Length: 237
Image 1 (cartoon, rainbow, N blue to C red):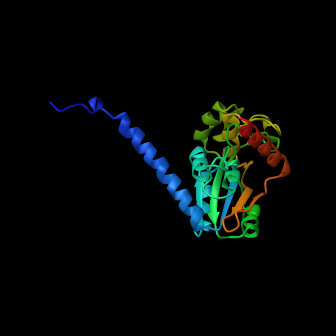
Image 2 (image 1 turned 90 degrees about the horizontal axis):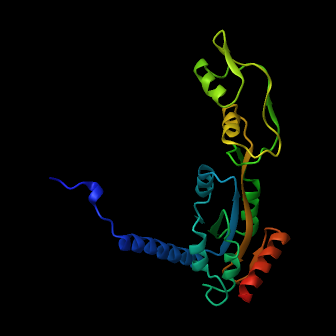
Image 3 (image 1 turned 90 degrees about the vertical axis):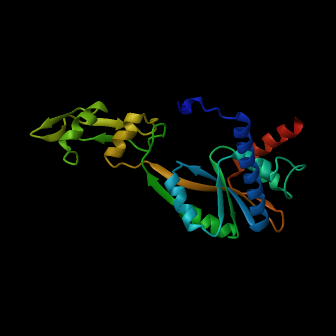
């Protein structure tokens, strides 16, 4: 009798070893990029979309992007002056918080900022996003929808019915107010009606020059002050 696949034992030691190897490979790859490229930039992403990030990667094939694994990237660059890979790289690590990524490139600060300041694309908002404007749907026929869509629209909370085979909104309907935190139903309705509210935007926060070891903040004084305070707390510990 053949053995069931459910009885197959998985070695946790091998799994842990594989994960450790992946982290070590990432650290090596990051350090190789530090040695290869002239500049290191940290960027944050508003309304992250994988498809949009792929577009950016395609346009910047001459450079390298890393996104996610912040803790591993901090180890690669160095968390402090004593373990940093190169002078002042630990200052870059301080910005590896939240949805941020690392860009290795030979393009200048001016070229990088010019590109990303102009790269802003709208997309459909998701549940949890903030409504950028108030949206109210007018009473009347919704001819863009087939009759089979009517039950789905009604399930989303829209006051609809079929009139002579045409999906019809029976009264004006407020989808959201400006500043609302969108629910899954609200986000779905906005998408069905083709209303885009989310803006995919990349903000350059800081950069480091491998030739000089110079570090510069680009994200704003308030955030820089906060990071300095956190750095001082870490030093105190």
